[in-house]
Amino acid sequence: MYEDMAISLQKIRSGLYIILDDKIPFYNLKKEFFKKIKNMDSFIYHTNAVLNFGKREMRDADLKEFTEMIIENFKLNIIKIITKSPELKEIAKKRGFKSEDFLEKSETEFGDNIINEDTLWIRKAVRSGQLIEYRGNIVILSDVNVGARIIAGGNVLIMGTLRGDVWAGKDQGENSVVIASFFEPSQLRIFDTFLLKSDNIQKENDNIPRLAYLKNNAVFVTEYKEWSLRGK
Amino acid sequence: MRSVENILKSDVGYKSNPDLAKVIAVVSGKGGVGKSTITANLSLALAMSGQKVAVIDTDIGLRNLDILFGYSDKIYNNIIDVIEGTCTLNDALIQDKDFSNLVFLPASQIHDKSSLKSKGFTRIIDALKPEYNYIFLDVPAGIGQGLKNIIPVTESAIVVVTPDKASVLGADRITGILETNNIVVSDMIVNKFNIDLLNKGGCLSINEINEILGLNLLGIIPDDLSVLEAMNSGIPLVKKKNCPAGQAFVNISKRFLGKNAPILYLFRENILGRILGKLGF
Image (cartoon, rainbow over all chains, first blue to last red; front, side, top):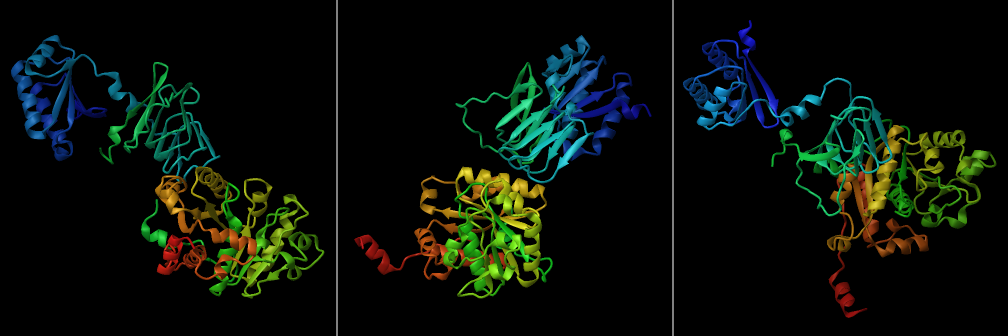
């Protein structure tokens, strides 16, 4: 029962985050890992993976065996190893893996805030002059046109084109995000901060979904590649 | 965005109840985009194909649909007279001299928009409904009292835009208002479309308009000098021959009734005309 939970998988920005329990014996860990990943083998081929060994102490040979097993069987691309043990860190360095104490905060911060509950779904296009205000998240399955206004207490997700005004995290949502398939807002605000737009920057018409978030009292916009149905 | 198959057909002319007329408003956010021209010519083109059509001018105080039809000297009673009870509905209706299945109810010039009482207006529409196939309302521009008057009686609306940003954004605003009032806004007509100007990058393309509005394209009317001429002479475009804008209205009326017809009718001059044009005649 306990060993079933020895391995947990999470989706993070750079790929797959694999947390390996540091209390069960190494042999059982290998067995459990095989069991868990085997069901989804071709789904995760060539995915970037971050391994978290926790406080586990490992020999060089063990690490070599484990990583080779992962690479050969599941074609995972190990980009980082998270460990609290200084010796394992040294070994990982020798083997050519990056290693760190903690997972970077930026890896998880977008995914974690998007809470499923309390969401308003809107199916029709929000047209000019219409105001949509809701205390939770707002999901719009169509466009938001110029002159329309969306005010949400939480996150805003727009499946179509965003051309109107958006205010996410109205009351205390410093962690709120705005995601849109086609990102051309006329005005964007998260919590108390506006997105500053420079006139000099050319319009990007590359059709990549974009995500706006608040950090250090400024709103930043990044390409939202996790949602890469359209690809690049 | 809709697929090509959907673009070819329109459901704005489809009637769920075949015994009663469908009430269709012709709207736009911005003024001067050609609502009255389109109302007059589309209703005439439908009348030419045998439909029984009633046209009501709801632009009280600033009527101009009668000029386009050429009825200016035939108006003795108007819609406000009917509402106030000084005449009957049949007294006020004007029948077209060429197509007897088209009637026109003129607006009053001396009253204002608030005189169009919703109770009386609904009564007029209800009286017309069993006798006609389609009732067209020519709606004043903007989102004021004029629009509020027609909301209780309208079932669906056709949005008129010209290929410029002010008109498209205005149309978006008015579409939003009508949709909140449960009026089906499914189709748009692009007026004053100039292909030379588009090639120079001077106006919005059909795709750009469609991206903003997301409506079904019922038709495109080319920018044509004969439109102005027709208005001043009082002979509607569809009654003229060899007129590209007139042909565009005939195509729109076909698509309105669910038949296939090309969206844009581009008129090509004959060889003699082109040579004479080059020589400067």
